Length: 162
Image 1 (cartoon, rainbow, N blue to C red):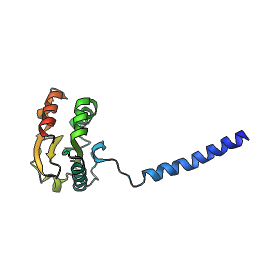
Image 2 (tube, rainbow, N blue to C red; image 1 turned 30 degrees about the vertical axis):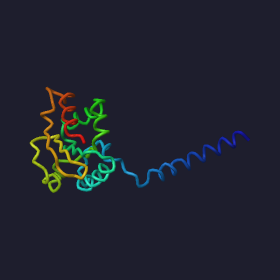
Image 3 (cartoon, rainbow, N blue to C red; image 1 turned 90 degrees about the vertical axis):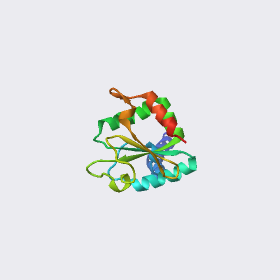
Image 4 (tube, one colour; image 1 turned 180 degrees about the vertical axis):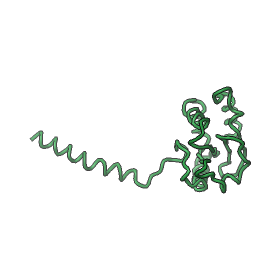
């Protein structure tokens, strides 16, 4: 009898659990600020609209992180945003971060034409919680040698956070 009960539980778990997990995740989307890749298929204008809604709700500024999967420094910046704990904390507490793709597949010209031209990538734009442009920042100015500079980034983030 114990084996039958155990078998029934295993069968139920193997059938029901995937259905429950799928139902819980249906219709959900990874929040903009946690997306890890630059995706040429994404609608940047819609992503910014969603960020404005979230920024208003959370009283945060918006940081547009523009780059592409082709860009080595973009990957370095992504890693820096995760591994520098103080920078990561300020980003999480004070900004809604939106990754905007710039690549041959999708240059997002319509969206990016609203802001000053980027001279290189990655490039950052700061918007207020309503989506109004505040600042354009080349990340080369926030580097030292072959890496992003903690102190320069902290100064930038603190200057432009709400």
